[in-house]
Amino acid sequence: MLFHVKIQQAEDGWFVAEVPALPGCVSQGRDQKEALENVKEAITAWLWAEDQKALQAHPVKPGEQPVVVAV
Image (cartoon, rainbow, N blue to C red):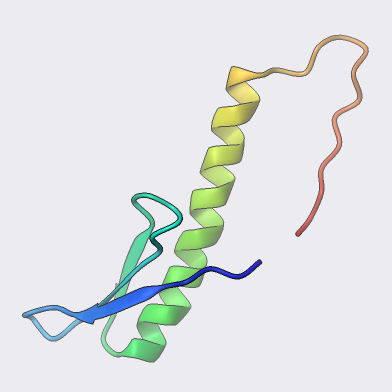
């Protein structure tokens, strides 16, 4: 998967990386490279959390076979 990331330098010198397609998915780093590495982890965590919310909202019914797909 590909995501566009917006990087801005904060007043304190840190770089803030935000993923506009994933509301609230933000990370930071001392430099742009670190911010990008950290935001990759944030994207993974954001997607996992959304999947867990969806599972709770739509539980597997008896007799259904859950399937997990890696992207």
